[in-house]
Length: 258
Image: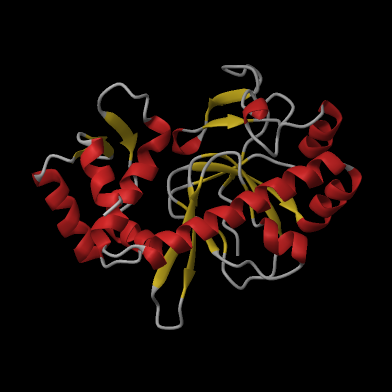
């Protein structure tokens, strides 16, 4: 069952256009797709005003705490979630309890697309990694919306294509890498890539546990802990609380290519 933790009503005086005052979990809630300041930056939301108006009519803002589950692998699809803020991990588990994190979703992604569009069960479990806004759209409303607006259907096709390429890249990383050291170095570089301005040290927020990193690269938690200690000792990186700092990018790139 989806844990719907909080539904926010429209405020009388928003702090910024389209954004309310801070809600539970320290989030700023986007009240309406029509007023969202990030709409032009995100693939699915960057549509003609008439389509966005219809999208807003079938969507309600909802917030979730860290650890909340949006949907579970094998569950019959009830609809999709538009991730407006925060991060969500998509994972799959084996019968013996082993877990593999397929990818980490960023704001702007629509979660649960494949199951909802194809009429099959959700292929992964979606778990909130940090407080997030994820707006739910019921299956029937979403499919009707796609049938009504070809532009929206195109955006869905583009995202599903991107998800396919990400899945292939993940398979290559796990299946073709020769060592856990190579996998971890590549993970660190990819995690920090969007924060690299090319001017010295790279800093990024890392909210994942060692266990979750292990589930991403297909290694054990003990291996990840040991390798991170080695990386720190070699001054390749530094970790301060939830902040990951790359100190020697060429050194990590050498390990990732080895």
